[in-house]
Image 1 (cartoon, rainbow, N blue to C red):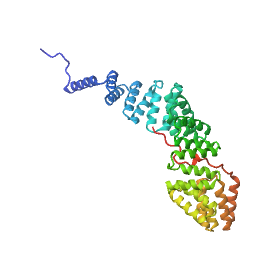
Image 2 (cartoon, rainbow, N blue to C red):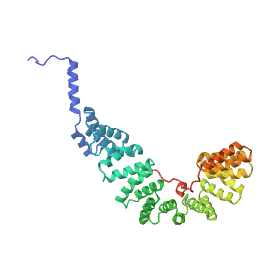
Image 3 (cartoon, one colour):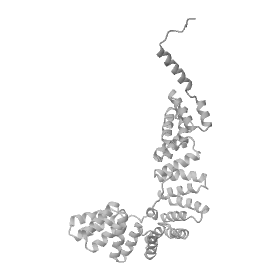
Length: 381
């Protein structure tokens, strides 16, 4: 019997066959969902990828692809899929929250803020969005905004000590000391022996001008952790700024018994020696501090003062110019430079420095928060 099919070339029949087989192998959303239910996330992601290739305007498929990629820890590709879904359908439920989380997990804190803010705007009671947005602002070092959102999150979960700590750190960095103190009181209610909480409570009290109470908090922390690095320095700084130099000396020496190269303890101990006119001893300590760390301003101010007294004017100018670069808004370096230039007969330079002094106003003493290392700590995605 004769074949009644139209005559087609072998090549065309092969193309039709391959196309038919390819179409038969294309996954459907139902196939992808079954793979997800079976825990086969890589296969499910492949299925969703195929679906998006077949229908590049399927926002739901891109969102599902992003979710499966996120569950595998592939946050860069997940974020790309979420962005495509968001562009196709901005009203897709949960898409902004998922995109924000994917960016947050990569440590892209600034990039996470936009989508998380959008997620919170569409669902103001979403605790996860509140928390992630606050942590993203914290990670981006935008502490005032962080404290706003973390405060709401912490009130919803008062037993979460880690959340209270990040809130307190945000408030400290934003100089919202009452907010910080409230958070630390909540931490201490649940963990009264925590040296870290006492340290941070002390920082908040110092920021509020309650330095004697701050000293008590640091002393309590030391009782719990007498060998904790930087703790004795913090207490010493509080004594130093209170002009209790004998107590401060003991604190700085205690810090150096733990860490002989602690640059701040060396510098402030050198300052005390300078105040007592022990110039050679002071200079040894200050130079050692400088060798360890080159951004401790008080070390350069004091070295400049001592070198001026010793008539080493060129070295004094170098030290004071370094102090000025570290903080041009402080008048003390300009004043001392003016004195040096005056001593060497450079009238023009001297008058310029004294004129600059008149333009500036003394800053208030820095709080202990600015001196304590590692504060605030980075957020962990």
